[in-house]
Image 1 (tube, rainbow, N blue to C red):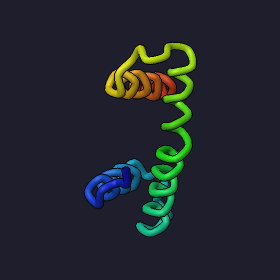
Image 2: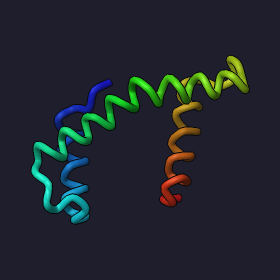
Image 3: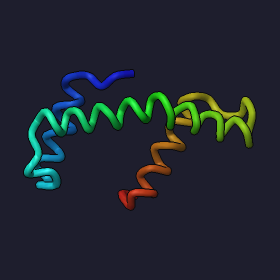
Length: 80
């Protein structure tokens, strides 16, 4: 699923307010964020689903898998 214009704006503004890519243009940031989104949807998401299914076939719902990934990402990036 592609990012909505609102989501893209929110992500870009969060990045800009953190001064992380302060020297980058709106177009550059949008392109990078859209590339991340595309990669996640086409590569990561199917791979994560396959990984979970390989160890626990038909055990978890899509919502449960999403929550697992959410908390794993938060932990991985030291947000939790």
